[in-house]
View 1 (cartoon, protein in one colour):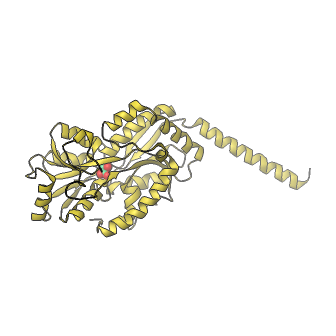
View 2 (cartoon, helix red, strand yellow):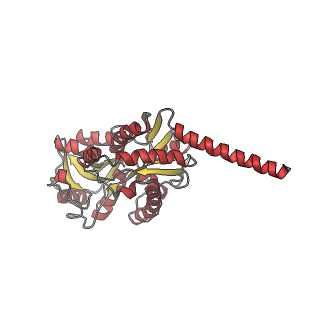
Length: 329
Ligand code: MLT
């Protein structure tokens, strides 16, 4: 056999071994617990949804999924941490509209690129938000709250989960559209931010329904409006912003699971298949729907759909943030 043929044979053998190792890697995955980084404090809507999803996906993968809360700077601290993790499938990011969509428009020095540094794995269903005020606030409806904001510039204190969180972004869009000046009060997550609305330390919050509904049902806060296009079955008497003070207004928080760029595709496919199987379990999705979480068409749950959505959102928020003058403060 000539030297060239020997070289070709060795090259083919090397490729065959690599493919086998790659396949074996995916077959063996996961051989130990997996970590999902949640870049907000425990107790908020992202944390709650992530834990519900992790519990079910873990059963499909046969290994625990551990939630690592890594809060700070509207979720960008934890996201940067996840972007630096080994691309082996054992660390993934619970992504979100804020730090994976709007952040490039808000943070001039972002330590990661939502598109270049991550591989999208799958998308969660979306969650609309409820505008709630502390029980003692004088505004009894959304019109009165806008009137209060107009009469008392900078005196309507709205808590959020940090710059670029959906609670921050949607509050900023609400204020800009309603023509009022609010004072935004940042926390490390909507969990602690909501605690201070319940306690009366701040006036209000835009919080996702999965964590907002229990507090409303226990009358610990007052719901004034929802951000969904139509009223929510769980809050029939609460109007949408679109039918009251902000015609056409609609907003929800979207989420997805991302892996560090370079994670083997076979690993991503395995996680995605485990998730898609969970989303075919009607008993599980019915429980999410009871929290007013909005199911998506199945084809929108895939990694490729999430990738396209992420790119579109990064572009969209650049225009939205500029038009509404949303900035870091
Ligand atoms: C937000 O965008 O406000 C987050 O969802 C807050 C959180 O989940 O803690």
